[in-house]
Length: 186
Image (cartoon, rainbow, N blue to C red):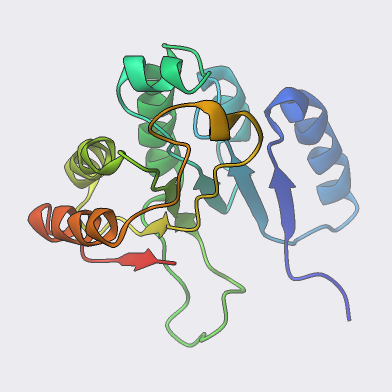
């Protein structure tokens, strides 16, 4: 029984309260690993408050070009914030790793990046791979390929469809070009 870890999902707006709660919980014996699952653009202030508290970061790295972020409805500042946050998360936790005697995901520490591959998004993905490769080419990356053109996306030319087999193959080629060694596509 019991929990294996505590997962914080998109918690940035509550970082200060979370830090206070973790301090109180630790005083009362809490020892569970903390997993931070965020949007990939957490503020540097929030990340500094979490330094030493988070065991594993799982950010979504969405876009690297300002014009692409803006076209999809994000701030054109998203890429800059994402880059800063990714580097800081890596500094805090390093690459994804698990104890050598463990085959379970429990006990894993480090940084695992997720990227949702989108239609017409292979060039964007390749730029993201290059950025991550500059941090560490053994960077663990989960490329999500299950994009669905839901809601308003169905009305935006270019993202109003599913991925093609050619796009999937081009993403694999980009991964190989950047010599990424720990990549999972699903």
